[in-house]
Every structure is written in structure tokens, then in C-alpha cells.
Length: 465
Image 1 (spheres, rainbow, N blue to C red):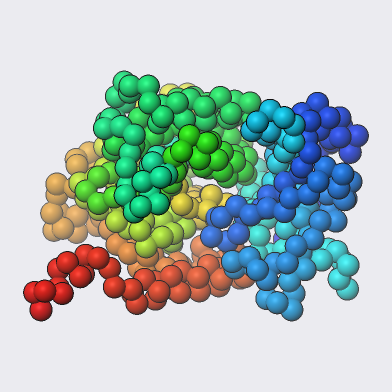
Image 2: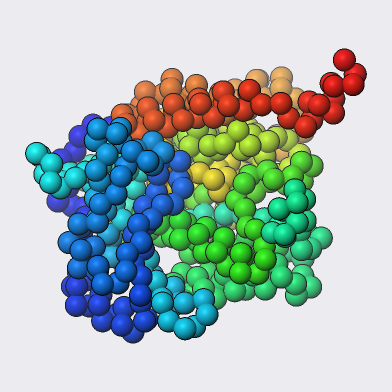
């Protein structure tokens, strides 16, 4: 990604408007004994450094260091000293599980290089959160845009004890929007909502999903950086609360064959001067503005590269197959859920697009950067969106798709990484460090998978041949 040092002053890299005394006062109210500074690696896995509350001033002054050489995709061993710069606007409090004191203050942080180095402290270009912050600031400066996003991250709940014995046992046989019997799964879902609301989330809905043991909890959309931060908090909280109920929560896209996988439908809209620029009430194309249609065309243009971030695991592509409500075709429609992009029946300032292909293992900081970058390219080049699809594309032939110039999403992680490597425009919206380490990590994952012998192969081939 091109250097944009002039943008640094626009970015809140330190204290927001909170004083150290204010933070200490809040900690006393919440009986905080520990401070947990969280950050995310290139693969989207949350990491943290935990401190006793007595070290609060050290954290406030950005003096908490860690060894970046031990983090996936971070620094080489000779440049490993890194500092955490807490973003205090992301803070939330977790009470002691037993009510006996020892609450925890969690704060999401940016990663900077060692402030004692020869050049002083600078933002670390391998930090996915910093990459998104920088790209959002660039778009804000150039176009005046604010990118709003919302995510529907589905997850499964399995019995933790059975899982240790290798069995995937769910707590229900429910289906989509079923009225569940009150069991551990429902209790966990309600407890999650309770905790999310304490953390400041506005939860809009919770329900059972299509597969047994599969759930969805939706929280209100927000500015892209806030949504990415909230998604990391959301996933961590769900896993923690599930464990308290003897359950294992997983966001793995396809944990069981033959059932629907877990997606993360991602909604997006662009705002400028307080108005939704995707909205045009006079438009005959679903009330979408020309800007929105160009934005959609950009996503279609760069769909392959986006998929490398939206579906980052080998397992992701076992979800993206026909017949299980996951999209496989790069197209858009009004109500049809089979293409990659759907236009929800929203009016007024709720006008938005829904990208249905991502799954909840995506690193949201990288995903949102890729989606926005693709949309910006579509708008700047005034790309033309194809005609919307009104039929179930799962049921149409490959010849039918070819006649309409409809392309398939990548069918494997390898294909998606190939598409990212071939898409210079999308690559240039990320730091060189992030792109190279991300691609190298995914290539290594593919090689490791290919070297394994799986149970299916033994059952199919061992005796037969």
C-alpha cells in the first residue's frame, strides 16, 4: 500500500479523549484487577498482553511491549520489538466469573514498532487494523466517504465433552427460526446477548439457523473499523460464554458434511455528509444510485481477490457449493439468495448491499479493506454493473451462465490466492508486508493439507485398491 504519512494526523492513535484518571475511576467502579490489551494477527486471530491493573499508566503511555516474531505474519526476529497503542474507545469490562472480584478491562490496540528505535515509534505496517484505518482515512480524504458495515456471523455449538472424544454432538435438532426448547444452546444464546448488551452492543435479533446446533446473533451496523472491532469482541465473548456452559462454539465454515455451513453475510453502504450515497429514490434500479451500481460492479470485477480474504480457509470452500444456500456465482439480485450479492428490501437510508459469500473466519480488517477498495475502483472507473439475476442460479447450467458472462467464485483456496496475486489493484490497497505474509501463509496451509491422508481417502481406497 502506498505510504500516506499525511493521513496520520487524522487517525486516533492514542487516548481518544479519555484521561488516565478517568480510566482509573472506571476501573475502580468495575473492580478491575487486570488489563488486557488485544490485537489481531494477519490471520484474524485475536492475541493479547495481560497486565495487572497497577500497570495502567504504562499502558496509557504506550509502553507495553511484546515480541512480534512469535506472532503469525508479524516481524522477523531482527525487528521483533513492538509496542501496543490502546484505542481506549474500544474498551469494555468483563466481571469476575465468580463475582469475587478480579474484573478485566479489555482494550483493542494498534501495533507500533519499538518507540526506542533510531527512527522513533511508527505504526507497524503488518497490523491489519492499522491497514484498515489508513485506507478508510485515505477514502475519507479523497471522496469524503464513510463506509458502514454490518455482519451476520453464524456459529455452531457442540458439546465440549463429546468433542474431546471426537464426536460432534449438538444440543438440538432445530431448524431455521424454530422455537427451541430451552436447552443449553438457547441459554448460551441468551447469555451472550446479555453480555453483549453490557459491553455496549445493540443486539437486533437472535435465532436458530438452518442446521442443528447452528445459531445467529445480529448486532447493529456501524462504521467499518467499529464493526471490525466489535466482531472480534463478539467472537471472543461467544467462545468464552459457551465454555462456561460446557459447549464449544466454533465459527468454522463447514464443521459437518451434508449440512449448511456458517456464513457471515456482510452488509455495506457508503455515506457522505450524513447521507447514504447508495440511496436514490428516483432510480428505477431498486432505488439504488449510480454510485451504488458502480460500487457493485467493482466488487464483481474484483470478486476473486476479495474471496481470498472473505473465505480464508481450505474448509471455507466446502461451504461454497451448490445446494446449501451459499453463493457460488458472481452476480447480484434483489431477493434471490443464490448469487454473491443480494440487495435487501430496504428503504430510505437503510439502502445497502449484502455480500453473501464471506464466512466468519475472515479477518474483518482485511475483508472490509478489500470490499471498499473494490467498490472505490468501480466508482472511479464508472464500471457498469451487469443485469441483475432473477432466477435461482444453482439450477441453471454452466452454458446458461456463460451466455450471460456470469463467473464462478473461486472453488478452492488455491484459486482464490491465485486471483489475489493476479489483482494488482487490490494488492496495492494493503501493505506489501501483509500481502506477502498472507499469501505465503495460505500457500503453506495448502501444502500442509495436501500432504495429509484423510479418513475419506482410507475408506474409499484402502481396501478397494
